[in-house]
Amino acid sequence: MDSKKNCIGNISNLLSDKLHTENMDRWLDFRTLGSPSGFSTVDFWEWYASYSIDSSVRGALAEFLVMKALGIEQRRSHWGKCDLVSGSFSFEIKSSAKITCKHPESGAISENKRIVFDIADRHHHITGDSWSEKERCSDMYIFCFLCDLPVTNTDNWEFYPVLTSDINVSFGHAKTVSLSRIRELSDPVSFQDLGTTVNKISGGVLMSSTETQEEKERQEQVQELQRLLACYQVASRDDKNVVWAALNKYMPYVN
Image 1 (tube, rainbow, N blue to C red):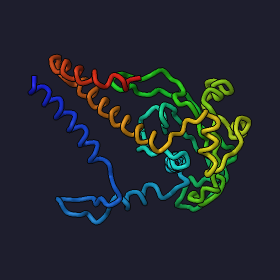
Image 2: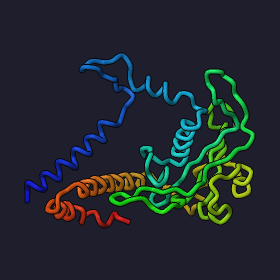
Image 3: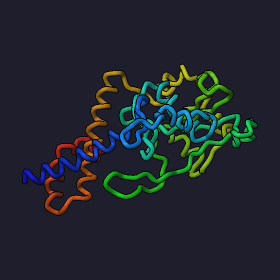
Image 4: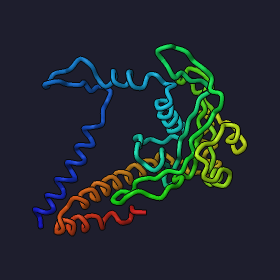
C-alpha cells in the first residue's frame, strides 16, 4: 500500500514540477545544448505582446488592467470558465477598441465603424469530466473599451461592469452586443473608480488582503485536488482506491 501511495505521490509531484517549469520569469534565458541562446523571455514578450492594439494582446491587457483595478492577484487562466475570481464571484472580461491596425507592417491605423463585444455562451471543461453545456459562466461581465492611444494610459480606457443576469435578460443567447446597447445598462467607469463601482453593483464581493490570502490558500488546495483527479484518471483499479482516499480530505473544497 505504501508503494502505491508513493507512486501516486510521485505522479502528482511530476505534474506539479512540470507546471512549475513551464512558468517563464523575466530573467529566464533560452538555452541550446546547455548554453544561453542569446535571447530571453523578455525578447519573446516584446515580440509577441508589444503590438498592444492587436485584438488578442488587447484582450489580455484588458484582463490585466481589470485585475489591477479590482485588487485581484491571480495567474491568467486560459482554459478556466471565467477570467477573474474574487472569492466565489467570477468575472468575464471583454474588450474592444475605437482604433485598429490590421496590417501593422503598413502602419495604417483605421477607426472601427461598429464597436461590438463577444457575449456568446461557451462550453467549459469540468476537471475530471467532459465539457459543460453552453452557458455564460461568470457572475459579471466587465466590458473594456480602448478609446485612444497609448494603451498604457488608463485614462484612455472606459469600463462597463454589467451583471451576467442582466445580460441574459436583455440579450438572451445573442453572440455579440454593441457598445451602444451596453451603455443602456451601464455608464462608463474610469480605471480608478472600477473597484468601487463593482463592489457597489455586486454587493461587496471584492476581498480584503486577508481574504485574498485565504483565497490564495484555497486555490492551492484546489490545484492539488485537480492534480489528484488527473492521477485518478490514469491510475489502475487498485491505485484508484488510494487516490480516492486522498481526495476525501478535499471534499469541503468541491462545489
